[in-house]
Image (tube, rainbow, N blue to C red; front, side):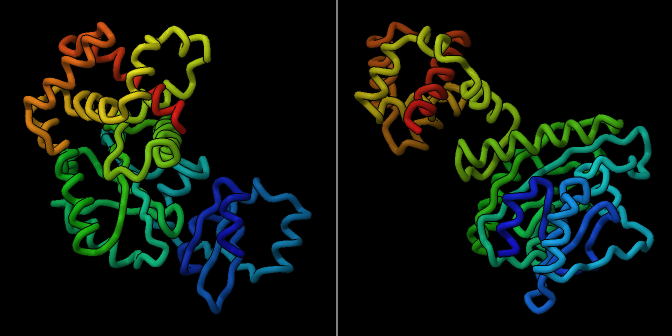
Length: 300
């Protein structure tokens, strides 16, 4: 029942320890025996709702001790609090993650995540299964390929299925909170509309996001022969999408599809013959990629 409140209060989050309550701007309710607590921003609760929640759950009080760096960042990013005490010339990258295991051991996962980085990073939990890794510019060490490897290792060695959203590098400013919220929105969109992929980036999510916003009259202007071909031949759709997602690299595409390069080339030639669109230049590839996004949208 307590976790169901997460769907009602947009910016609420779960805790296992009342000592982790990050701000006096939230109410915390929970079950002491189950050791689960939910924090809800005060501005999202009416007086009537507050009385009801106090009746149903035990309320925990915020302990106004000296805030940790993680507390300051949480207050800044999620609750529009004051700017954390950091050097003004520092740049940051946010790596969001979503765990698809309800029984995950947060401390064990934190230890595993930190083990992949060469220096200390900060990890903040938004809920029991979703969190944020904050890297300073001087600490950034993992490339996208290395993060993919990290995701695969966590799944194989720790039996934890996890997705990441790799944010951009930003100089520190008062707008950093707004930029994070935008990336948070993209990550939520990706999880809901693209799937449980290991790694997401702005560049991968935005074309799908754009396709979802296009009005019907624009969609009708798309080459209908492409949609008809994809509908008649789902294998062709999968082939073209993987080819485009792998930067038109035929060898890598054939390897990922477990087919011979000649088979791949036959399918690519067949696509061009049927639609009249070549895939060897940017404009043709971009048009077909957008068509793939729209076709996927129509299938949902």
